[in-house]
Length: 286
Image (tube, rainbow, N blue to C red; front, side):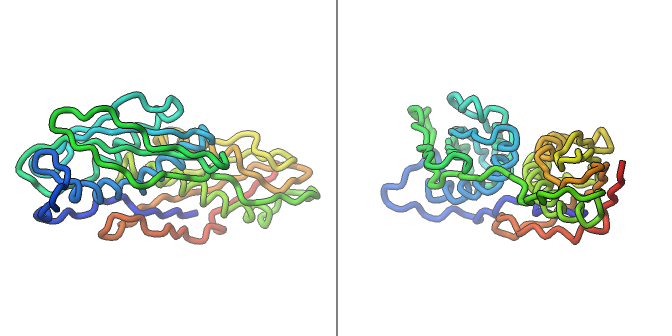
């Protein structure tokens, strides 16, 4: 099974900032008109962080506020969270900061201090609204850039509805029915992994012990040292897979190949296009 996903690339900044409109807010030489579109482009890789994170905490939501120190050349010299992120989002903060570090601003010839908030809502909770956080009073020279978008994501769930009548044995055709769910699972985890490690690629084998009920009894990844966060995400989500029930259960092995593709020039993610995966499946009955 091959899973491809675009690498998150920062949009190319304009060589010179546009002239500010009358009354625009500024911090040093950085204007809101220049900073906001570049920072808003981070919402897509941060969305990938959040979708993978929901595997561990499907109802987590809230806000994270970040503070960046932008060097004279336009690169981000330092980025951190400010205030207290919602406890349920704390472990996701490093992925959010990694996404911001890929942004590039036009060189202004002077350092800038910029804050930018993210607001998260899980699609698991209907009717929930998460307002943008109230930013603390700005530091001297800080420009506070508003984020016009809330990041709303539905947690990954398997789409397969298992048959109600158990088969006599687990067949190749029954295993093939699970392939689309394995592909979307791997893509969810791989998208977030590329935010933290843009060069991540590799091959692993998913070994699944399937109970007669079709539920996953045990799931392992080989090689055992396959890096996190991909490994932890796949193992966590993989326990939610559903197979068709059989009288015998089975041990199923699923080879997975991860390859990154280039994003377009705007930095947006191209559609993931996994190759046909049936040839990589080898169900083995117990």
